[in-house]
Length: 59
Image (cartoon, rainbow, N blue to C red; front, top):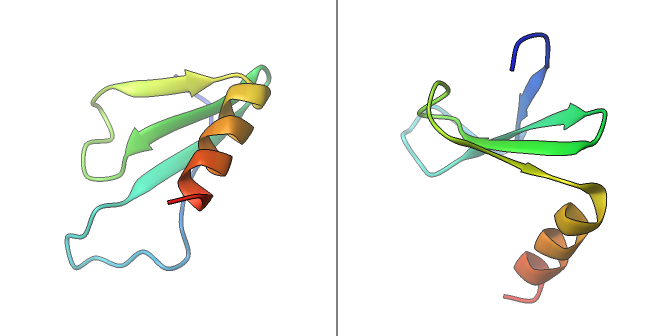
């Protein structure tokens, strides 16, 4: 996944906490663990990403 810009939450820090990074894709959004940038990634289409955010907000 070359050429994409990964963004970490502004509230993230380097203290080793759990954090994800997001990258905007033509067909949606990619999500990865910031501590394992070469590890697995999840690619979501726009509606699936919105559903994920909605689910997280409800918790």
